[in-house]
Image (cartoon, rainbow, N blue to C red):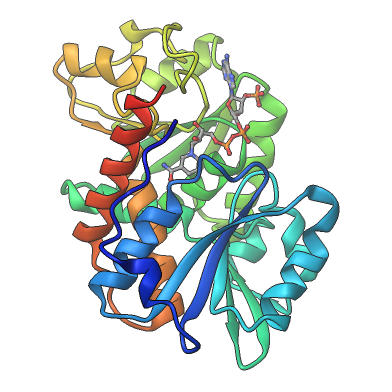
Length: 303
Ligand code: NAP
């Protein structure tokens, strides 16, 4: 049983003027966004509340229209609705349009605008530890939505070259084509995870990002997505997975002395950017991080 976070009388403060936001997902029970955003709203002194929105895949259109009908501030969107909601919005940000995926909806002047804050969230988490992709050889492993968002955001930082490698190479090509469509002058190469070309690419990486679900709970005792022998201590090794924080890949990277970045920074910052879109003010990032880490810890304790 998950323990209810201590909201210090939060529910009692809801009144007729409370603004509402939420997260649309299916299932939604395990979302960490409600504690993170409610903590942020409280810290910002806002009479706002953030609720889980359990949206069945058959009802995505009505749910999106419901944001407008019910006068929500907006909503986050996560698995499995990030692509589907695109069809029901009035407008999209540049990233959301390129990715055809939305993780944040904002109701503004009766228009539903879709944003994708995942990639920018990752780049902010990178900056937080003093790294940028500018001029670097960057490798993104994966071919899903997270890989595409992160590859595009890193590509906007003007790396020396970008590689997208995936178990199913056709999906790496799809990600690469999104990046090439936005940044035609950038060198983007693709491949699988096992060929000699791919292994050379990995060895030459300065920033290595695992955007796959390999090592995610409950399958934590697996081999890292690529052989650890290909990595060394000069590379920044990132893993987007945040449960557990230290994945099998990050543990191996730490043991060889490489700098590492786990997925919690991206999760905090994608939420912080959503907060900024909704409120027009700076997000209380440290409050959000503390709430997120506490919720993660609570969840780990209840397994
Ligand atoms: P997704 O669309 O399902 O993509 C999963 C990717 O993992 C695919 O590229 C898949 O390869 C690869 N994969 C799965 N099992 C594999 C294996 N055994 N060996 C090699 N590759 C394997 O998922 P997603 O939405 O992109 O999310 C990916 C990860 O990012 C998840 O762990 C998620 O929690 C994390 N994420 C984190 C944040 C954050 O804020 N930190 C945000 C979004 C996502 P194939 O294409 O070959 O199947």
